[in-house]
Length: 316
Image (cartoon, rainbow, N blue to C red):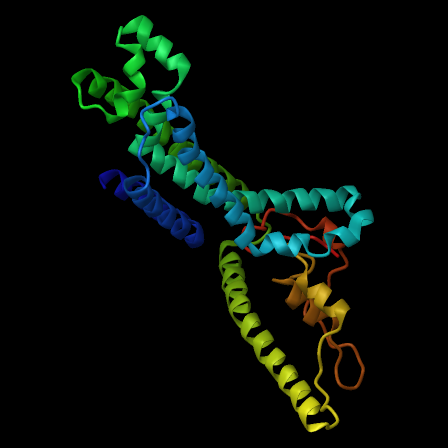
């Protein structure tokens, strides 16, 4: 439990609260999983069994990270209809940047799983005692009974305990190296992004606050509007009456506000919805409304370094 607390403290120091919470849940789940489910077979299947428990859950968590990230579906929805645009260098570059951002988030949980698993050492002990290279090494150096090495994880003999302690030490060293490399990479990426930021610290905080509020409100607005439209259609169907007019955005409008977005100082907008409202909405008299800031820059030219705040950009 002490090792678990150490990893949880590290996870809590993540700058992104979502990443820290995900790491916490993964670390706790791994501890429960290894205690309640894992049991080394102590036979010729040690290596396969240990590798499966070490890597397959991490792979599943990585795939889950892609599935639950809304950027993945914003990027993929309708992408097959834009094959010609995708072949353009700027479009392809933007797509690669967004995929990197998604992959960075998706790797939090699997990296946490592997790190905590290495710190506990159970999976590593099991798979190493089933590795032919390690068996040959021990036979040449310490002269144990090679035929019984695969049974060491289930044995309480002194010789078995010595070998398992050495393996656990190796596993813990690898675990701490993995944790330190993850933290260092996260620090370097964050420093690079902040250093290249075209906006100040306080404006960045404001952008984050705006993005959080818009994300919370948009779901409630869509649910309310969808409910009104559904109720109108049902009343018209059952009562056989003419429908009351309800304004609904067009397909083009939905496409414009659904694309991923990056910040540009030439157009001081904080989301695709903000840009749409400022640039495209018309007043009741048919005149284009005044825009607070006008941008003539194409979306493909927007810098990608602030994608960690908003959803990045993949222009339509």
